[in-house]
Image (cartoon, rainbow, N blue to C red; front, side, top):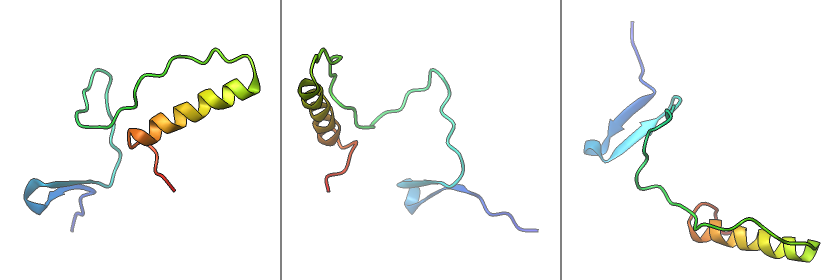
Length: 70
């Protein structure tokens, strides 16, 4: 009988492959992940103001590397 593991480390420990489910429990800390800068809640009272706030949010996500430019 053979067994194929879904999660493994390769390249001398430089690369870890997760082929299964990564379950991050409450209280766990992940280091090195990008974070977007804080953005306050929108106080827009018009559609145009909401569009401006939303585009600011999108720009922040892109700048943090959480969204790809296309």
